[in-house]
Image (cartoon, rainbow, N blue to C red; front, side):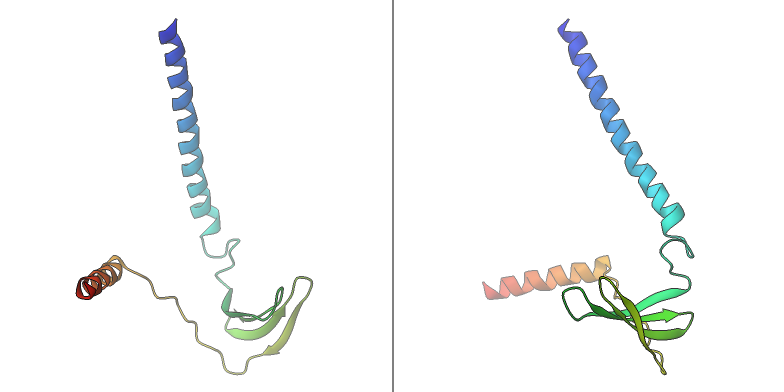
Length: 118
């Protein structure tokens, strides 16, 4: 009697873990298939936000590049307005990628500073 109870609990636990794993991989597949591809919901093919400056509790100024033409846009909770079209485009600034080597070098330099302080 006790063995059957333990077996049913283990079976229920394995079923739950299986559902969680399937949900995880299913959501990853969905994101890769529909969200990340150019021209999808993210809009990375024709429109890019070059820079954003928050100027208040609910307002910000955004520079938007739409197929090579850049606009200065004011955005609040209830209103979006094109303030001007920029004559000279601002270059895109990609965020520097942190590689494993750069992270490792930062950790090494930090540990060397700690050793020097001792």
